Length: 627
Ligand code: ADP
Ligand code: MG
Image (cartoon, rainbow, N blue to C red; front, side):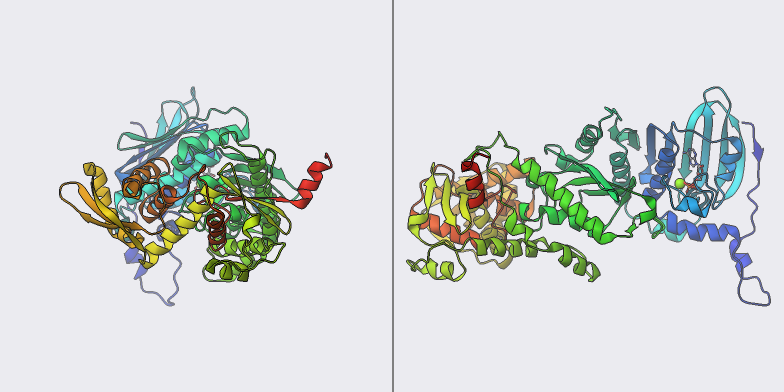
């Protein structure tokens, strides 16, 4: 190996610190300053991976490989086929504030690269043992540099190659405090996976491979169809398991201030966790609660309370209107017109969702062709100003449940009957008090599947099964929270035998099943005895309802990755609800509607499908006028 050897002979930093002199203020030795600054840029293996991969992207690489050992604590290596560096730059790049990306303050205003501070390599080099190999092409010699805790150890030419490889070994080896703060390897690895996922998502044309201890954890090819939405959808589906089955909704709009494009997950694909929301501003992944809120608010009436849709949105905006400099790790940005961005995003997302919902869905029977959702009552809710005030509060988390109920009140007001109705049953007191549907004569059941009724402004069509699922779901959720499910005793208790794995699941669910009103107990090997079932469950054969719920639970677990109480509540609702094709008496219909309007989110079934469609008088008139 040719190359000059440089002795790591730096004076001990601690010794320098206690040096006596006149004043008490000292200028820090550079190596100490670098170590301290490293703490800001590089907190854990994942942040090192982020900095290195961003450098590769800035270098125009189309293929990037990340190699880890021990979740990055012993090795993080990033290999790219980007532009590479010249010999001089290969050493200079490790100096603090050495960057090829900006030259002047003015450049800061028009940044289009991911890096610009010139801090990453200097920081990394001060807290690890780095080996850099970089070359410009396949004919000229490449160059290799070794640095150990900030000290240059070795440098010299090596065989030609195009691109750059940076190997970071033993991260924080000389900062034990930080090294000790690393979390368990699984946790650190999870962070790395998140980082690579985000970078791969925002660069669909680039190929990424991630190897950990020789295992390939990510491998996505940049096929580059050239069509943005196709590339992005493919990338989303290969990276994000929960979005794999979803029909993603494309979005593409621009104004003079801002352009937005990306894909939205369909409402029925929403999950209980927020994890799958990706926002990029000028190519940079950012967390921006306020803007995320704008997107969610556009979904609001389409989602069950507390569930979150998938989205990957790319905002492009003149860099002069956005400050990316507010946070050292650049995860936060600030727009000069935050409200404007909010309003535009909410409108654009709402429009794309509306368009996709109005496209007839051939997989589901549609009662009347060409019906569109009447969104009017929901437009009247004002989440923009709510959100603005929430932003100031300590807990900026949006509260979809509240808006939904606000919106539901808006529609609830709209459902006030055209005719006053005399109270006919005990339910009616509540119904007329809050403006529910009243007169039996005005309820119709179409095809034993849909309930039709009139409201002041037009016609309402309710899907009986979806509506009942919503009711049972909310009841189940509240029983699980309060633990007061009413039980209806069976005349003939029944024993059911389960497979070993279903039985294990059942044992786990047993306390929650009791809360729901199931009277169940273990009954010998893999069997249970059922003495009672929840009072509200109305299937044909209530004795089989428990095994049906277990089956449904398994199905939701497999298909929708639901778990725990959410799954249980959904399963109970699905198995307990009246089906399409079941004849309902007028009293049953009335009670269904009244209960529906007492739900927190009456407009959507637990899986996000609409329960109600309204057809306004205006719309009817338009259709008759032959428009
Ligand atoms: P920044 O990215 O903020 O400029 P870094 O410390 O990350 O700062 O990198 C310093 C410089 O090293 C970059 O500006 C770039 O010129 C060069 N560099 C780093 N990584 C690569 C790479 N993978 N390929 C080509 N050049 C690189
Ligand atoms: Mg960088």
